[in-house]
Image 1 (spheres, rainbow over the protein chains, first blue to last red):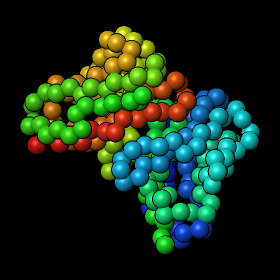
Image 2: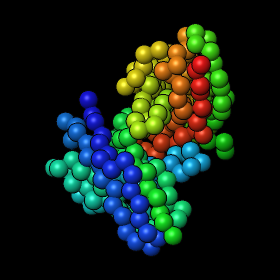
Image 3: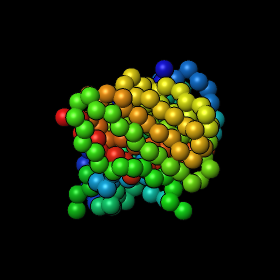
Length: 109
Length: 111
């Protein structure tokens, strides 16, 4: 079975700085999808970014980008120019089935 | 469009009671999911459905049953609630491996 590991339970960053959240996964599949979801205090789950495993190019969405290393089974999320509104729980997910335990990110003014 | 609607939003049960959580989506998605969220454990998949009339077990199915009689609805049942089922429950729907659309969650407490 696939597993998803987020090794950083909590992180903090100063406003306007850059932070990277780590995610590793285990699978024997060759084609799959990886996701980062954000959960602010409102509890709503929001898609941040999506990566298709067969695509070599790393996905980007405005200030959010990923470093996808397929051989290493690593999928980290970089948030540039951090904003106070980025404060949230961040979950890495494998396909629609398996989520990591989450990283609580706090952006400090 | 409403997206994904979960009812109820909050519920308190006594041990041994039963209840059903309702999830409804209006996006014509084939795939629907039920997750539970516990502190420090992220979201864990309970059951899912790949189409009307189909259901399948996820990571933590014990103590739960589901039904998908209509494409737009996915019901999660607890036949005999236990304190270990105290959690936040999320329903979601999607076209497979596309963006998951989540409901707003149900906070369930079992005393």
